[in-house]
Structures are given as C-alpha cells and as structure tokens.
Image 1 (tube, rainbow, N blue to C red):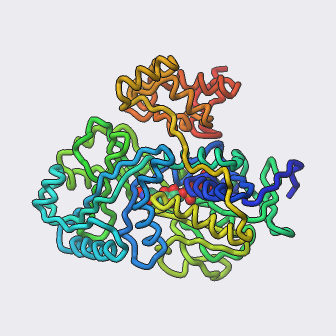
Image 2 (image 1 turned 90 degrees about the horizontal axis):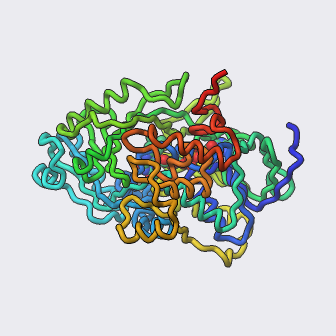
Image 3 (image 1 turned 45 degrees about the horizontal axis):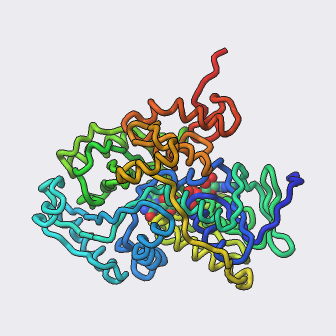
Length: 493
Ligand SMILES: Cc1cc2nc3c(=O)[nH]c(=O)nc-3n(C[C@H](O)[C@H](O)[C@H](O)COP(=O)(O)OP(=O)(O)OC[C@H]3O[C@@H](n4cnc5c(N)ncnc54)[C@H](O)[C@@H]3O)c2cc1C
C-alpha cells in the first residue's frame, strides 16, 4: 500500500468514534499522553450507536460473575453522576418486565436472582394488580412483572456526542473521514494507514464496531468474528406521552422475541426491536414484516396505545460475536453467540469486539477498562493534570423556564427565532450544533433534535441545509443527510 506523506505520531490511536471510541478517548485523556481518534465517517455516533434502544440497564439480565454483570450494575449506579458531568439528559423511569403466563414468570424469577446476586437494588416481583396500578395501559392479561426502579433511558447520540466533546476538550485529536485500511506492527508500536495520513502509535484501541473483527485481523489470526443480524423499530409521536411511563420489557410466553417499549427523554415512545436476518441487498433498510410484527405485539401488550401515531421507523444492526474455527478454508462459529463483552488485549492492540447490549449502559466503564489496559501497556504514564471530566451542554430551549429563556434570548437573539416548530428548536441551537461539529443534516438532528417531530423536518430542512452549506462553504446540493451518497437536493440540468 502507498504510504501517505502526512505523518502523525501519537501514544494511543483509537479506531472508531462510536460511543465506545469516544468514551475510550475520554478515559485516555485522563492520562498524560497523546490521543488520536481515527473515524472513517464524517462525524461521531453514526454506527451501532446511531440506532439502538437507549436503555440504561440495571444488570439484572446478566449472568453473575460475567464482565457484563459487573460493569452494568456499576455503570447503572453511577449514571446520574456521569450524565451530570457530561450535561446529558437521563430519565430513571424504572422498568417492568411483564409476563403473561408461567413460562415467562419463571424468567422473571431467574432475573430477580441474577439481579440480587449482582447487587441491583429495589427489584421486586409485582402481582397483576400491582402492575396495573403502576402501568394501567398494560393488558389485563398480564400475570406478573419484575419491577426494576433503577432502569433508565438516554439519547444514545447525546451520550456519544458529549463523550466526544469532553475527550476533545481534554486534548484528544479527532480525524474524521479516515478509514484505517492497513495496520502493521513496527518498532515501538503500530503503523496505521489511512487515505490521508500515516499514524504511528504506541498502542491501538480498536473500537471499530461492526468492523472490529476485521480491524483486529489486520494483525491477528481470526478468533472472534461478527455475524450481524438486524432489528426494526417504530417511533411514536409525543402525543402518546403518558400511555407508557416505564420501560416495558415483554417476556414472551412462547419462544421468540418479546417487545420493548421505551418512553424516551424526548417524550416519544420507542417500540422495538425485532430480531431478523440482515437484508443483504440493503442492510440499513427496515423490514415490512418486522414492523407489522411490532404493531401486532403492541396491540396485545398495550391494547389502547394509538399505534397509528407513528412518525418514523428505523433499523439497527446487531454485532453478534462468535468464537470461530477454520473448516474447509472457511471461518465458522464454534458455538452460540458470545454472551459477554469480548475485550482482547494483545501486546498493545486492545480490541472491543462485537459489543452488544448493554454496551451503551457500560460505555464509560468499557472506555475506562480499555484505557486501563493501554495505561498498563504504556508503563503507567502519569495523570493529565489538566483533565476535566465536565462538559457544558449547549442551551436547549424546549422545557426551559420562561425567565431563563427570556434572559437567553436577550443575550443572544439567535435563540429567539424558532426554526424547528415541532421540537421548539431555535436558530441559535442549530448554529451551536454546527459550531460543535455537525456537518450533515442528521448531525444537526443528533445534536439539536431538529427533524425528530411530527413533520420529520419538512418545515426546517431548507433553512438547515442553507446553514450547513454556508458553514462549509459548499453548495446546498452538496449537503448530505447522513454522509456521502445521501445528498438531499437534486440539481436540475
Ligand atoms: C439493536 C440494538 C439495541 C441496543 N440497545 C441497547 C440498549 O438499550 N442499551 C445498551 O446499553 N446497549 C444497547 N445496545 C448496544 C450498544 O448500542 C452498543 O454496544 C454500542 O452502541 C456500540 O458502540 P461502538 O462504539 O462499539 O460501535 P459504533 O457506534 O458502530 O462505532 C464504531 C465506529 O467505528 C468506525 N469504523 C469502523 N471501521 C473503521 C475503520 N477501519 N477505520 C476507521 N473507523 C472505523 C465506524 O464508522 C463507527 O463509527 C444495542 C445494540 C443494538 C444493535
């Protein structure tokens, strides 16, 4: 491969700027070292972090003794502190795992046992009457539920973006639009080749999400591989606010995937996910059958929920990891999907492979864990004396007290003009999103929340495209929805 003439030296190179890469970078900047994050896309939080359920789990789903169980229970306990430091909205709404018969009830007791062993507080099995008192919208066919008051929900983008901004403020250098295409060991570390730069790093933290196995295999023989499957979700308008007040996990009576309902921090209701094969022709597409399945299940679990209040649907990709062995020249899985976090530390190459649920809940813990392995490998460099874990969130007008809003607008009139009518989002907030790194329409959406309401951007898209074009000194037709190939405007000949 041709070497790029631009050379960067760093102590730690993080590959991938999803939520895990950003938290790994944040934890690494607490050390007195140089940190570079290399991301193939134009922005953070565009991979698995883009599409998931956004639940902060308690740890009662994980087998005692596993890394997942330990990290999740710990992460959950500290989540308010993390979100306060990072200026991220977090709702500890609690959850009900609802059973509709004896098979599912057994699962509730199993999870209660797991939770108690994992030190999760407040767990309780509720009777039908108690469930209906807490969540009157649930079908009266419910027989029992496991109540977990510690379950919460966040906006996954907000969490990833906050970690990115904090890592950047603490000195991490982010290189977007650079795919690591080649990696080799060299004297004292690693050489990483991208289209634009060659990086020399003493240690590498591989947080490449769906490609984390392939990135590891640039240097190592395969041992764990990702075999992805897909998921579908529905988003209901905030007009359904109040129908469901807790996260509801429906534990199915027959084998198969249950349903999860999440009252989001934005006031919408998220319904999903399904579990199905990836549509190889268009991996990012939703599946009509999957969406129908969700609607039907909703009708059974929360019968009066106005399911027609859908404003969007989307799909996600699950990075299922398996131990592999070679048979007839092909790497095949040896057993069932690995049910724990896979973190491999191989002489300075630290790989987080196929991190599934509860990876979002544990992102800060996983980041610290990876940084700890890097610290050890680098011979315990000292702490960064300037490290500050606090990130100030930009103003969010929606929900702000009237007097605070008036004071803000007086200071900066850009906050006084509403651009996104559905979300009550001002010109000033879109401007801030662009200044903070949004380069696409979805980048603005992930930061400011535009285009997430009932009109899905129909009324604000034109103005935001104009703002993005101006900020990047490009033509409006060059502005994309979500990266290369998703241009929005067509130029008429
Ligand atoms: C359907 C679903 C639902 C989930 N729900 C929950 C939940 O409710 N709660 C919870 O705790 N967890 C949940 N999770 C898990 C959580 O979403 C993931 O653990 C987490 O988002 C993984 O983030 P990541 O940083 O590893 O991956 P990503 O976000 O995919 O980031 C990886 C990044 O690496 C970049 N990259 C890849 N290859 C290269 C390369 N060669 N060079 C440079 N860059 C590269 C990619 O562009 C990408 O940006 C869910 C996951 C799924 C799939």
